[in-house]
Length: 243
Image 1 (cartoon, rainbow, N blue to C red):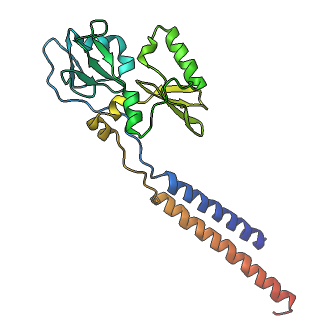
Image 2 (spheres, one colour):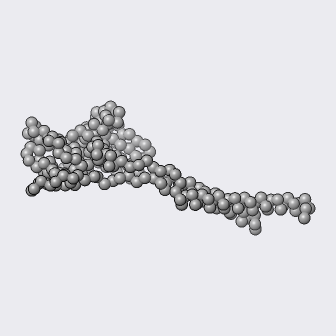
Image 3 (tube, rainbow, N blue to C red):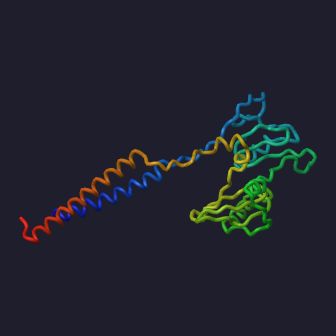
């Protein structure tokens, strides 16, 4: 009976040690910041004011009108109007007063970010199957395909997660979930927003709970081993006729 108890204590102790190591690896991981920082501009009387920033609404740079019809695509403004452009969470709007056909356009942030990552564009690469379906669905809802521009990279995958660049976006693909979403390139390429979005590196030190579990596991394992050794010695002594 005592031998069984020894085996049980040892097994439980090893299991608890394993749990402690898992807690130590995951319990201290930092959480990624998801909120976009707001500005501190003073609202223009009668103007459009979003997330602490004023949106120009005078032709030809009527960013307020573009935002009103495409805020789901642009995200909130995360920078001031420079006189030519303004950064939003996902895009950058650019004013082109000399182009009457398209005085306000989306900047090529996908191409810019790809190059800052040390990569060269591969124009007209084949889309990932999920990206192909995603772009087809977007076109079916009436979204102008020029919003994305050309596909300029092959799918870059690590496990089930992939990414693929277009001229204007970086598409993040989850093959397991079957989803495609945009990276917030407007924020990542805006110094202030990128700094606010950054998170401290994961803390892999053992948490207090993990340390307690580790100590408990070690104590149970040692108790179990001690019980087994005691039983073994007792058995040997009995076999040799030692009282």
